[in-house]
Length: 549
Image (cartoon, rainbow, N blue to C red; front, side):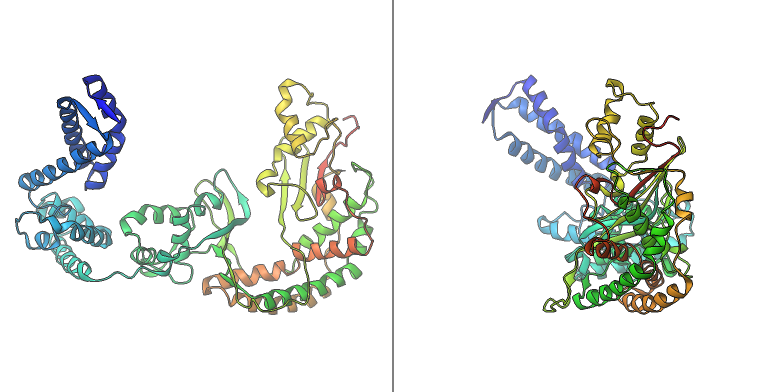
């Protein structure tokens, strides 16, 4: 493309390329002041050259040639005017105070020098920068940093030695620098507030790998940098942020560790099947001895709204809740140190499931089992209305979005609709659209989820807990399983893993197994597609649909 350059067009070209020119200056500079100086020089030269040219072919290439030429002039002038700069001269020149011309082949030396300066400790970097780059005296630096002059000299001598050693050494990038951890999912157990979701912190790949780098081995900032192949300067702000929000914990020797729970990066099909076999035995025993007690307990719950009149929905949810929540085996292990408290608020155990490979791919399972994934338990309680809910998302329901899509406002708006406060008009179109999207309301305005009259607390208190004798029996099996599982985790995480595996040995997975048995043996009839909207979900209210409040 050919451009005939006039003043107006030159102005437009300058405006278009200003961000790129500034970016070029940032990469070539060592400080914000230097960036501004270099950018101004380039812009002036580009503008002058454009006005002198009648035609320009390949505008972008033309501007970059001018930028490189201006940069070279800037380097020479900077060296003549200010003396030695760590940014522009070779290691030997910096450390020996020799005033020599910058060699053309210095690019690789400059790259290595910058790398090694970045690997100095923060205090040492400050001293080196002020002495070599800003040209300050040792007494000035001592005064500014609040340290003795002898300490400044010591830092300079140590820096000189470290830079010489590092300049010639080959830095070994750690495993995570060559093959970063990839996450499959990030979750939590506890309460989220605002944007304190662990996904906000660990969804960033670098943040995730910073935290994972100290999971098995505590490391200093410099150790983290070595493992990731990233300079400490670049990591410092991120490490500080992750520490402030609880994802990193500083230990002795300025080393960091973490209490974020990462799943193992390998698994055993045989081990997983053996665990499921133990849980299936528990599920079968619960169906025989415990489920009848739960069904008996909800017999007298008569004030309940059921969309299609299927009372089995109520029973199934009560059974699921009891097995998942009331049958949990208690653990006396203190889990408080594993709770993360982000600055914005909230309290939770953060969990990451990384990509995982199979250790025994040739193992042929003897059982063909479905998924036992579950998202929950999810409790929602309104301060505005006498309304609350319990739900857990599993393969038995057709809800989407898990906990993020399970909003308290859904139940509050449904309550407003039930009590006649929410008219189906343009003003409330958004609310009605949301309730219909979740299928809590049908297209003709009928309430489509089970609602129990009363409070959630009152209902759950009616339901029986696991007998102590049965709990002790299951606890022995759970402890053996949990102890074996904990061996796959680093020492600081083993208490949490044992505690959680004891508590969750009878949990949502066994609850699903119990439902599988009940639906499979004909105790409960198969769910219709509409009933799957509210499977394992109950809303609690002081009024039912059709009643007058």
